Length: 114
Length: 112
Image (cartoon, rainbow over all chains, first blue to last red; front, side):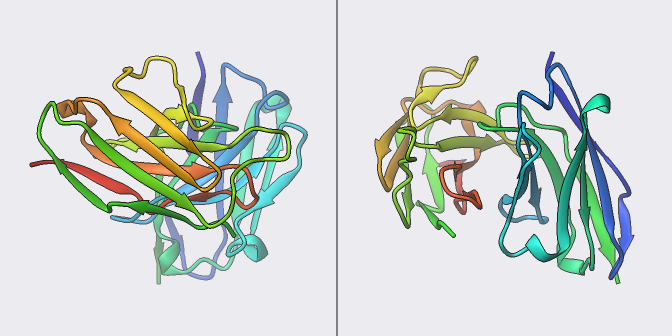
């Protein structure tokens, strides 16, 4: 069955780089894109970016300068890296299958400490 | 970037009541390929979001048919025909026609 699972550090220092991994199963990254979405505590969903099935990427305009999304198709993993973290980057980070957001990971809560 | 405006921000309903949520886009969501990439999600408290409706009106597998979606261009609606207790949570519309994709601000459905 289709599954996505986020992993990475739960506490990061301000100004450092966040590295998260989304490990997928039940489908191929060459057939589906993967989207990253985040949700600050008590707030709404924010679309961060997508890596398409052909490996191309699109990013949220506000995050584009410090965000990158890559993948390793042989390991069925998608990677998110975001630098220059600030406290307002504290959020639950989700990966979800594109186009239609039909499967989601359970999310990982990342706290940015000053 | 495309802005999606959801109304109302909060919706109080009784069990069995029918309700509607509006999602208005700052520009047309009709893609040049003829599809309209407007989807609806539900996030129950403490859970990951789940897909309800995709491509405006297509019901995701396993989702009860009391949920329906309609609309075109810039105006879209999610209707729940007979709210049940398990429907409580926050509803989001999201567009995938124009990069970067964007979410609406959410509509919280609560019991009256």
